Structure formats: C-alpha cells, structure tokens
Image (cartoon, rainbow over all chains, first blue to last red; front, side, top):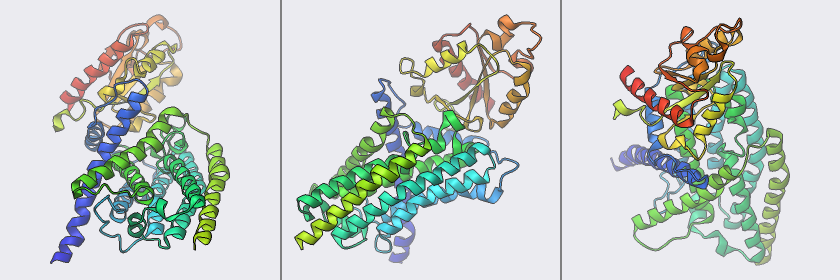
Length: 317
Length: 139
C-alpha cells in the first residue's frame, strides 16, 4: 500500500509543485528583466494568467499538418519536462526516481522537450516552423558536446553518475587548485549552455518572433501553446535545479523547510545569472554564430576543464 | 476568475496594411519602458495564431486585402480587432484613391477604433484596455 502511495502520489505531488514553482519563477524572471530595463514589469502571477487565457482560447489544428504528431508533441514536451523533476533532487527532498536514473539519463531527458518541439514544428507544415525546427536541431547538436563534457568531468571526480551521489558531495572540496580551475571553467560552460538549452535570447534563433514569426511555435495556438509554455517554464526550473545540484549543494543546516527555501533561492540566483541577465543584455545571435560559439570556444573550454579535472584526479591520488 | 481570464493577459499581433508607418512607430513606442505595456500583460507576439488582439494600421491597399482576411481567419477565437489611426478608421488622406480597398471595417469586423494621425501611445494602450471589456462581454 505504501509503495503504491509512493509510486502514484509522490510524482503527482512533485509534478504539480514543480509546475507552480516554475510558473512563479517565470514570473520573477519576467519581473526582474523588466526592472533591468527600467520598467515596472508584469505581476508575478502573469504566467498563470497567460496559461489560463491560452487554455480558454480556440485550439486551431492546421489543415495540412500531420495531425497525430502535431497534437502529441506538446504533451510529450510537457511530460518530458515533468519527468526531469522526478530525477533531480529538490534541495533537502530526494528525487523520487533518483535511484533509477543518473546524470546521463537526465541529460537525455533534457533533449526530449526540444525534440518534441522539433517534431511538432515539422509536423505543422508551416515553412517558418520548418526553419525554426532546423535551427533548433543545429543548436542541439552544438551544445550537446559541452553538456556531455560536464557529465564526464563531474563523474570523473565523484566516480559516479548518480545525481544523488554528486549532490551529496560538495564537488569544490574534492579537488586541488588545478581541479578548482577546472570546475570553475565547467560552471562557466554550463551557465553559457543554459540560455541555449532553454531557447532564450541570445540563443533564441529557433523561436525568433520578429524574424520567423515564432519559429517552431508559429502554428500552435490555445491549449497546445499553453502546454509548450508550461514545458518551457518547467524545463528552466529543472535546468537551474540541476546546476544547483551539481555545483552548489551547500547546506545551511537548518530545518527541512529552511533548507528548501535556501534551495529555491539558489535556483533563483542561478536563473537570474544565466538566463535573465543575459537575455536582457544581449541581442539575438545568428544560427551559424550560435553553432560556432558552442563548437569552438565553449567546446574547447569544456575540454580544458575535463583535462584539468583529470590531471587533478591523477595528482591527488 | 475565469471571467477575468483575458483581463490582464492580452497578446497582440500587429499588421500594417499599407499605412505610412507612423502608427507602427507609435505602437512600438507603447511597448517601450516609458509606457511599459507589459505591466498590464500586453505582449507583442510574432504569429497571429498566438494573438488575442489584432492591431491593424493603414488604409488596406488592394494587395493587402486578402492577406488581412487571412490573418483575421488565422487568429483563434475569441479575438478583438483594433483599428489604429485615421487611415484604418476612414482611409484618411488616402480617401478615394484607386488602390485602396479600405477602410478596415469594410473587410473585417472592427471592435475598437483608435483615432489619431498617429494616435499617442497612451491612446493605443487605452484602446487595448477597451478591447478587454469587449472580450469579456463576447464570451
């Protein structure tokens, strides 16, 4: 009985908590971006309002789309994002499926919402969506190498791919000076991958709304658009949680709820540094510049970080 | 709650049907930090499929007539059309020109008119605020 409760209700609880938290974080992100631009900005509940409005709108299915792909893509995207929350520990609360999956699985799960968007974009039959889907695929191919380096480097140091294991050891304390530089470089890499992973400015070429009219999402409306919106919010939250779990697993040593608030604060700071600030400060890059940026400097930096951590491990042992 | 769903979450799609760009610049001005339409949840979107409000400017030239109709049909219901500027409301200085098929309300139903040549950003935001009332009544 208890196991059924655990299997059914804990994931539902975490998914709904994750949805609410993600939307609040999206609201905070929009508000802070507005303050950066000397605006008042929308209230924190704005994402909830947007979702509610989209749910009430008519959902148009274009005549020449591949209907089953077009209709299932938003659901797959949202489910993929929510699955992430079940594998990434939320501060003091362990991930319910943490024993069944590791960092590699999580990195693969991160590609599912993007792949669903690509499939949906191609299926909608709109030329703008096709361009957006192609750009999204190019971008995914570019930032996957640095992410793989991140997984390899952390696992090299912690000798485990399990996120629970990685987040229970403070990675900064396990290394010598060389490794410290390596981990700092890794942090830079993962923070610069974040905006592309989440398709935010300056890496939002697949969704460029002033250029290709919303790209991947151009033909989505109503409920389907709301699901993509939710999936984007949850994915942002999950990615920031992953960065916190990997790099900042510091504990305050207070009560469990205090620890949870501390975790949320850390997620918020990671989000502001890697997404909000960048998206306010920069303009959109062209897709070939994005690919070049990830394949040249960021890939090199991540390789250097991996090498430094490997050398450090060899020296320490 | 449901009744007020549109009240502060209007997404706007802007289409120019052959105007002089004056109104379009004022629409952009309404989104700048000085007027900050986003604090009311008003957002400019790139695709009519995402829109609740169509901001139409210009007197509707012959070339733009069927495009305007198509954009109107691509917008999911419930939706509101706002004609921004004198051209949209009455074809303005282009009145009786050989290439003009407008004004806008001859081609698609218009809910709110924002007069002016060009109207001030405050007037445009006020027009969108009027569109809220219209949307809530429509449902």
